[in-house]
Image 1: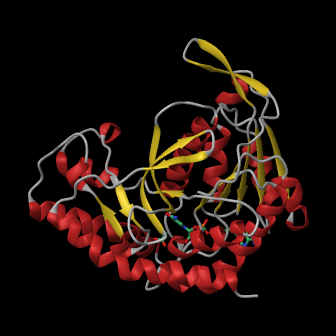
Image 2: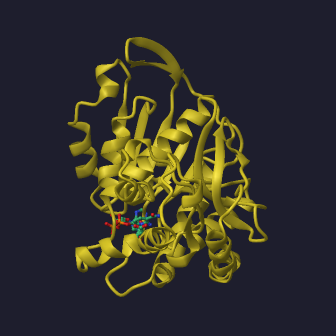
Length: 337
Ligand SMILES: NC(=O)C1=CN([C@@H]2O[C@H](COP(=O)(O)OP(=O)(O)OC[C@H]3O[C@@H](n4cnc5c(N)ncnc54)[C@H](O)[C@@H]3O)[C@@H](O)[C@H]2O)C=CC1
Ligand SMILES: O=C([O-])CC(=O)C(=O)O
């Protein structure tokens, strides 16, 4: 997620949680790639978020249909007095999509097919991300940006370079480790928290099961299996979908949760901490995923790794060369032409 300066809340609106009604700032959220496999369920999920007062959906194809469909869903937001405006914007209307945005989620671009690496998507998606980020820098330079488009290890540095020319920044969520750990540890997934650090592809994904809560004292063999499953879990989905794309529903869910955390941070809710791939000094790599504290200025604080097990220390050293190469590939691409 990237961040420039503090957003100006253009107004206030009422939301009701439980029995209390409270006033929160009006927030505009845009989904770029809204008609895609991720974009559609993500649009639906963020429509249900009472912190969103305006939703702008943008894609190069089929956006009006998606917006019409989503607008027919009775959301909690409307029930609880929030006025939610949904607009569908076409290719020449990116400016209207982005103007006034507090949060932009980018899920535009092609997904993997079986046998492909995320890096195989670079040639197509790098240009899409660069173009969209140039527009963000121009039309909503103060918005937070959540990056979903792959390869994230490169698209985030691309966005950073584009924004560096215009402002400042930070990055995206990794919230998928939870389910596998809960299964193994036989605990309620809703209570589980597993920090995931490093990057977002194969061995660059490093779940820190030694810091998982609640603590389950898993055997070393189980930790190795879980780590591998975590690193390859998304490939499981790509293969199961057999050429029809990659994870869409679980990504939309993770994206909606992360967007909610960003909005809470912007609205001043204290202690909002998520794992996110951001510009970092936690290691010698210029970008790295670790826990970050979200706040009124986006990423307020990048938290360190705390103590790692020997297995995790080895994993950290092993992931660095690949992550470094992906980061520099993105930086070099962004600085061409
Ligand atoms: N970061 C993560 O954890 C995950 C990332 N992904 C990535 O998310 C991306 C999207 O995946 P899906 O939604 O499954 O793909 P999809 O092909 O179903 O949807 C992509 C959408 O982007 C649109 N699009 C293409 N160029 C555009 C542009 N310049 N402006 C606006 N919209 C544009 C397409 O028209 C399409 O509707 C892929 O790159 C995929 O690898 C997918 C799952 C998880
Ligand atoms: O596996 C993929 O290509 C999509 C992805 O990044 C994920 O699901 O984490």
